[in-house]
Length: 324
Image (tube, rainbow, N blue to C red; front, side, top):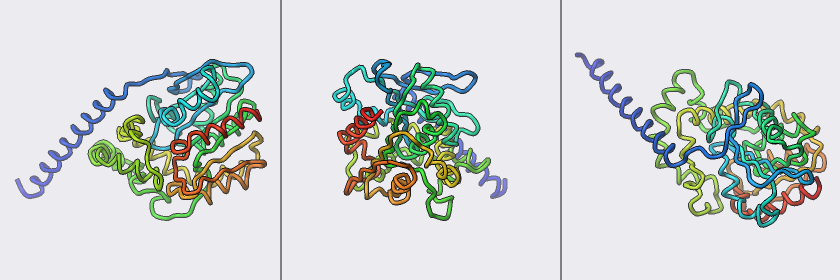
């Protein structure tokens, strides 16, 4: 056997080991974070996994929480769970959503579109019996809740954008995002990358990633474990997340022109030191584009204001409830 044969054999051994490590990691994640909530299907569409708290009310809108990239429905429950009950009582109806491909929600072709996700979330919320909803969307979820206000305006009673990603930004390379999102979206190579590389390499980098997302503020103690941050390393979830992130900029280039049509009450919460999405592009853009939008800026705040300033976040939700 020549050197090419030995090389091929060695690569096959390495690939097998990486595949087995990935399968071990997926199994460990599933055991640590079993699916909670319930799958709610709208007609023939794929279902979404949702967690509900409180009870439906004819007098008060429901609160619908939409997480950002690399996350799941636990995001807002970690941040605001206690404050929501303290401020609005145990009967306030809240819906925490796993976006398509994340948490326990399945994924379909075309689900990288915030408009598609918004329509599915709106349909799911209506299927739960909700007639009026206030949407709270973080980061990538900001683009979803913007579309939710447009695709079903009768349902939408208000929107809180938290460190949103909603407008086109400058940047070259891999579509203005980190390189591995682009690689994961490549045909064939992307599949090999996510099945063999992302979990073994990313497993021990989660804590560092959490710190970078919170910076310059400090992460909440135990945040990564409570969230189940490693769930995004599962191959299917990583591919779904990568497609969302990689294809967002082309989407918002067109979608942002419709933001002036958002007619419900709007709050924007952002940190002036956000290094993940730039406040001067996205939050300032929403304030400019949406009539009557109110913006709150946290001095020294990073990309996770709902985690580091939960009381302020709940105050803005309370204002939207009063205005609705």
